[in-house]
Length: 377
Image 1 (cartoon, helix red, strand yellow):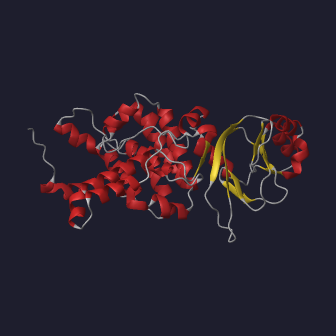
Image 2 (cartoon, one colour):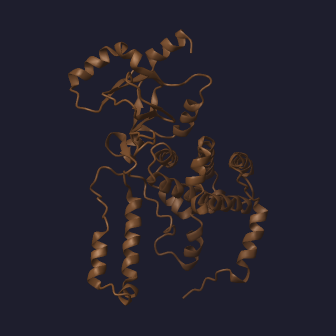
Image 3 (spheres, helix red, strand yellow):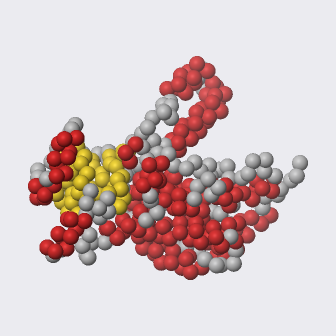
């Protein structure tokens, strides 16, 4: 980077001053990560917009521990201070006034022509707004790998329900009612009053049919998520859904918190698992296609080991993509160009996506005489 460009970026970009940073911790912004040295004081030339600052302790083998971090919407020429010990407002203002004195200890945000991470970051965050961050994230945008969400509450409720259902069988093996109750009482309960929680839009993907649904509606909308998608769109905008899809992905990718992957999967299932809405041009244009393109942008930046360890778990992604291809085929193939782009991205991971006709033939063979029958009672 030449001196003139550096000067422009220094004047227009934001600065982040980190006080009393220990030497030898993992520190990063967005998709970049480094190990801090003795002179490290923070970052400069940060492009205006939303960024994620993160840090972790390193053990003797240089393996990072639990990650903590925060999202912040930087303004042009902003000088933001964060500290690991208490600093009064007077000291903070003094630092802002003398930011140039810290120049040698401030690392430069990488935006050069040969560095693609900032361009990728812009693509991954283009639908995330400061308002959304305020609604979804804990106070001040801060969270760690241990931050919880309502999805953990669901899992715990399911565990407790299973324990109670198995009470008779457990009694046969000598587990008394009192012992069972002590097991249930020992299970950790969700602290719904805690502020260290994500507040994602609730998506009950298993209850995707209308209240008082007829038997036919139960059958149809248990598989087709169109009713649930339309219901959510009554209270959340298309931009909200896209923003949460991007934010949930970053919560797992860079925040290393698995609450993000659960919400990301539910949005993917909600949108790509909706067959009926493919006949609605407005929903397709404002929700379905943008989510699909966001998904492709996310895959392009995924390390192969992340895909193998997270996205390929339980075969969910492969199944929902096949369902989407089949839905598009049955609706007339209007999104075939988007599916062609998707196939090109999937080749990066040696994923093969069958064609619509092939999936239709397979579905017909699997149903056959065992297809479900609807009986009116």
